[in-house]
Length: 295
Ligand code: PLP
Image 1 (cartoon, rainbow, N blue to C red):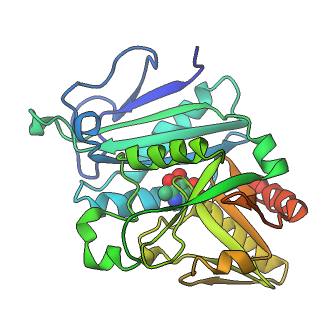
Image 2 (image 1 turned 180 degrees about the vertical axis):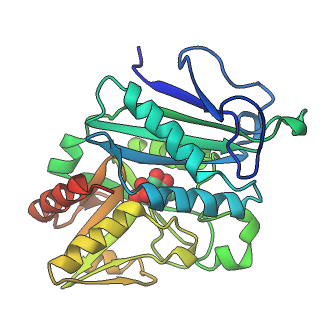
């Protein structure tokens, strides 16, 4: 049984007024969502997943900023950062152990038959899965086409590339395809030969003394973990850059990581079954730095 804590957010958007509290603790193991909620029926909403380490949300402001950016891309009301922050604080206080946990917070467009009820929001907090094996040993990945060209965010912004929407069925499907091919994760590529991101992670390549990732204008999520890795790399005197990355560059990379808030940086030790150099010692140092971040 889950030890998770649920906080339902009754006034998730800026400017909403009303009586009663803006949020309340609810039973995580009983139904809270209407079956006509657009988040459930259309995946029409947004979310963030952030790590909680030693009782604090890591990169809290960066996650809330990205949440607001996703809301704007979907023409959703602007989420109220103070309400979400306070709701999550309440939840952290109720976790049996807040030393290594995570929070997923959500905003949906609300009820498709009752627009007046406004957007739906909640935050669900739970203990983190144990990712030590992937962190210590690295992972095998496959390259899978995302089915569009690098300029999709510019040419077809309605596809919402780069927004963290609830429509992750494609991302989950890609992970099942990776499992069918005997790999643990995926790196998406474009039809014109560029590298994008993982289904739930950013990509970072080390090429000599430079760490490189795909720029957000390619329609990838600006990663909070990738940002932390860049900060750490700069403290080591390494250079960092955002630039479009050709698939062929993977073959020349001195190291390659997938990075995400809860799993942290995991070294890629094989791509499409071909072994790649995995810098497990640098990975350990990066993760030590990421875990020690206090905001
Ligand atoms: N890209 C995608 C598509 C993601 O879903 C995620 C995280 O879930 C990331 C990148 C990494 O973001 P972060 O490091 O902020 O967790």
